[in-house]
Length: 448
Image 1 (tube, helix red, strand yellow):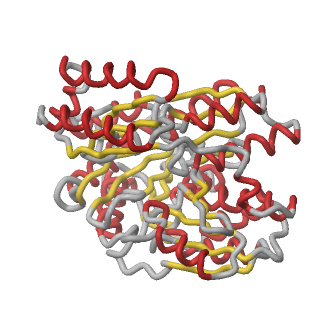
Image 2: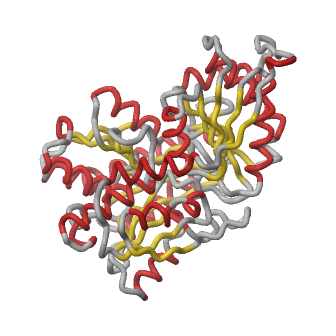
């Protein structure tokens, strides 16, 4: 992991860690690195989520980009995958999304996409980091007519909705869907999308005010949509996060359908249609063991990557795999998107319901989720580093591995987006794995 960029862009508390000055310099460095071979004036799209600090950072980024001669197109409140789509569709040189995704309001982040709509590889991010943090002298500052301009194109979001409608290409008439927008970007797109596809929608948490993004709602807080489904006659519930790049679902009985089960549904559907390349799905090391059991039963190969949808996509691109994603709800349909897209995933799940006539509970039953527990430990960078060096932590993890054997597993990792260490265990006995997780967490906390 770099000094500035984590697994999903540069992220921190806005106006404290992620300052206007830093955003301006990221804009300057990104424009320099991504467009140094461009002979014409480069064009960069900027989108943002609904948190109050996004407007401030948008202005700072735009100033930085213009100061090095790039033209900036502000597309307003749009989902992250909309920027990934639009940067290529509008033939821009780069795209930037201002969002901290599922994090609370006080956080914000900067995600950068290249001209093809892909998140930047580590090498390019490191080059940008080096300019921002070490030496900005290679960056040149033009004057006169060579300074960049700013343009507003808030209508571009409709091009993204058109793209999703064409990608799904299924009539959802007759389906009743509850949609939790997390008071985020989906508030501006989800109702239009699912209504155009024919569904009857019941909207929730779709009134952003700058501070209520992800606040006890959306894909990280499934309680409200679960309660709503349990109290109403719904076919499906869909919950997005703040920038709508992830989606979790709830079946007609109020039972969670997480990212692993959604990927299982999609992979099996594609295999049955004969379009699952090499019968392979790409997932991460956090994927539930139940997914591997599902895959083995259905003749599907599983390829694992590090946590982060960028790493999932890298593996998908190597061999043209069609489906991949994460338990958290980042799911990539490579034929239609260059990054995780929550609304696309939700619409694709609804399309399978519409085509088969089966309830969501039956469709999702192809995979059984093994009990899993997760303990989050607040961690400084120094404590995160001790995961790789401290003998007591290593011994505690090895002891658990031996106790679980083949009936479960433990995964301990430092978060790439938050100041946390995550201790995850899976196994058949929920009480037992909770005890083991607490034991390992206590050893780690003792090293703080």
